Length: 73
Image (cartoon, rainbow, N blue to C red; front, side, top):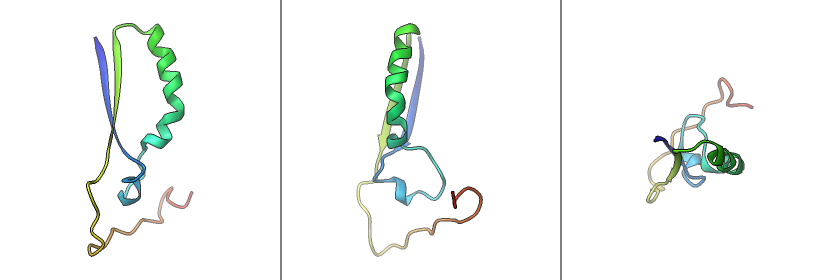
């Protein structure tokens, strides 16, 4: 058995991250492709887990987003 666990932030958590990282919203278009591939690749599994924050505290300042590298694109 071959398996993979992919842990990604939810769309709600995404604005609080400082680095460019994929999220569940970006992965959704690929789910049909991966599902079709699973019919050809036997004895394999892919599990995707989206994580999210419990709450936010408006009194705590957020870390500003950068404008270097690919941030402007």
